[in-house]
Image (cartoon, rainbow, N blue to C red; front, side, top):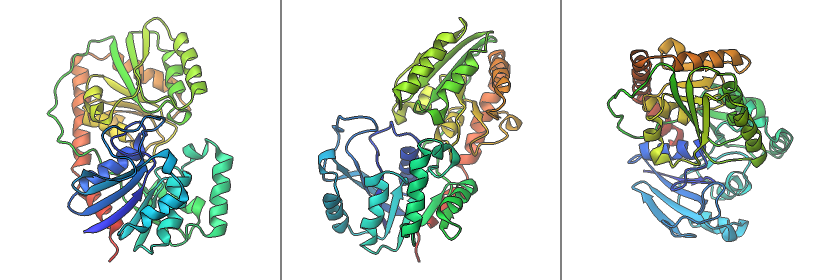
Length: 381
């Protein structure tokens, strides 16, 4: 069995880091019996200082049949200790998550290169996309140019989740960069049978499950809701607050919503509860500025909940498949129209798009080629 040494800033039992953590944990679950993972990560969750109480810090922990994790504490996180951990590992392939984290994305390339693995793979997780570069663009572009000049990514393979992400890598890393496309895997669960949920015409319960940050466009969603003056609309927001300044802007917009719109912040949602929670709503509303995959979007379909998203994700032409709407962010009036359309739906009309959402998820999650792509990602013979 292939052994893969992986670096990632945050991993299970954490859940606040969002898509990167979901993508990797789903991959680990699906590759049981095919790939063994040794994971080096932090002993705290995203934006947390309290260590996990279910693990032993600064030691290897058996966390899955095919995975062991080393949860390093902040006081032990340095070059010397990481070098010792890597040197003591026996592995075939190195798999590094992200681009800009010094201890978990940049330094690991140097450390694993000393061990001469069969492959060094970097999963960009959308961090080379335009939506990611729009935040702290100057620093990111400077780093990428410097890395190019120094040949830091020489003989490194980039893992892209789709052809668009491959194009981003070739543009920013260089046309000679090695890029393998392997689509991300869904949550490994048995999908529940479809069940109708109450839906009255004029009543709409929506949610968002994502960190509250500019790239997730929480403020844009709230701006749309300030223009929705009909029906009884509830919008629950789940996720960690990335920026207090941005959240303050969101709070101002919440105050501007009309009386028929009720917005509530519900805090962060553990990953194990996401499917159940999504099944309690009529719509998942997340007009993101960009996603290389969008795990919460797929999970919404898996919960038989249609979505209202932007066109900046791989999930396209949803209205044609009757499982939601993907709308250009330059057309806010169409977002308002979509919200009004679904809030006006009666039980029969809503059941149709709910069933279509689950069918869409079943079709995607049963695609065997996804697993083959991910197995081939780590193969080296």
